[in-house]
Length: 315
Image 1 (tube, helix red, strand yellow):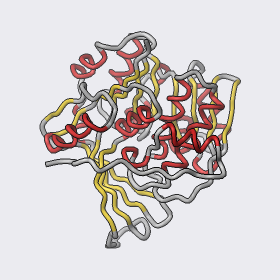
Image 2 (cartoon, rainbow, N blue to C red):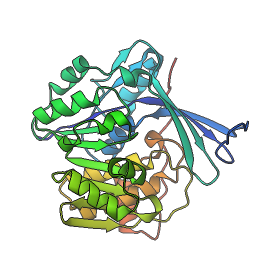
Image 3 (cartoon, rainbow, N blue to C red):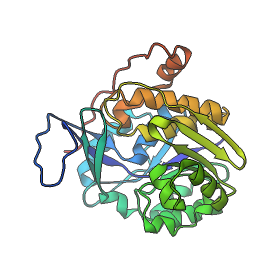
Image 4 (cartoon, rainbow, N blue to C red):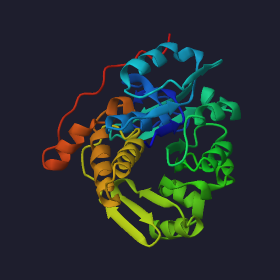
């Protein structure tokens, strides 16, 4: 039976509500602070689980996240047995969310940057051919992870964010499925226009599949000569934090469950539309599968859903 492993970042997110994104030399008061678990790895694992899949999460946290990890074990419906605690601080993000739901994010890597080869080997020992590995570029040791996962013939999913010089030096031909937006697409191809970016990616990595998100302009799936598109769902935006992670999680859940790329894009588009109506990262904003399917069945009536109860983040 196929197993799904998310090996990625686990953060403590500090979400500040502001009137506008703070500019250089400006001091601005925040009207609200929300602290919650985040990081692309955790966001994607939570979303996959709420979409109905069994998920294993691996990553590192610091000694300041003891209580958060305990609560994660109880509440996430994700297997976090591979998550380990190391000395130092947990990764964290400072997130400004403005009045129209746009954000600016600063990340401190912390424990996420202590992933090493020994830890990778211990995690991947339980996984093999055709299992799914979901990665991002918010942890250390990515080149080694790609190498070992490819040797095991795993299906490798990568969100190349942030798109650093170190990432571009990796052998990305090992990636089975890319999730990326215009910023990462431009970095990987040097092209500007979405159509050129997709063609450039397909030429550079002919054996890979691509999900290319364009925010309010929708999203594309491409594999070789086959390409499909789904428009974005227009909803009032409260907070766009983790919307891309929710999109990725729901696309993957639908696709791995046997749905066509077109159907998977639809699931992902409706799920991410629901997520931007809530504050916070995926722990608060990722909807459960029954809510998404209710929305799909009746798109004219967007269902309301309640965020999860807060997690105690740290001692």
